[in-house]
Length: 296
Image 1 (cartoon, rainbow, N blue to C red):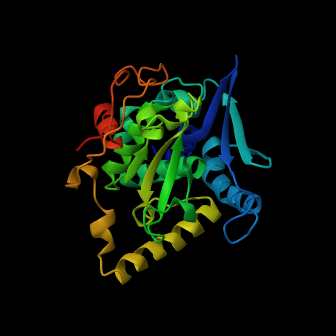
Image 2 (image 1 turned 45 degrees about the horizontal axis):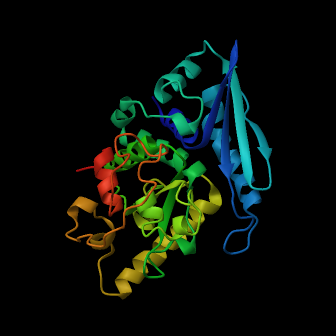
């Protein structure tokens, strides 16, 4: 294993598609850009295009040929193909468990045994295609900025990523689960007839300053991360608090009690929910995380 392979694996696990033909395997990775401009009104597509040069410098020596690059209004797709019998393809398939799409991927346990640098590059690749940080991502105070990692449909991958973060001592601040008790805890949307409102992506939320050791390879995301991390640190300092006392804390370190009860939701037994927690009622994101395996 090396950092280049780790970065590529992270991108594939985050937003990759694997198409196996008789002789070749085609791997496509989507880098979304939901907004067209950054918060300081720069063209995001230009930032992503500039970042592709850095991504190519990491990946192309590994794959031994050029990446294909297509840019659309709201996403950029990079891709490459290799013969099925090549070592690189066989290793990728081994690490992602023969999945065809990021929605199906379950991380091989060996990823948790990567070196610290390899884990960081894996998570950076993952964040480049799933993560974003915006001013609207703040917590209660306007300076409490957070990185969001969005994972659609893949409950196990959420836990895998949280445990990988834990292995390099980066706490998760919150997980916004695509679960009816979390997204529609008082059945408001359900009672309005919007029965599937809660079926969205999962969101892992991490304090901006805690995410700095990983960072982004996509230029505009990294610039935003550095700016918002500085704002977070300054905000806590101005409030007379030590930033790390607030941000470097796992949920099991907190004495906070989640006493707010959610009402029973008719969709708690929906097949979208993993069987291990299907039919159960939850009052906090922590209860779901604990049941699925993100624990001390």
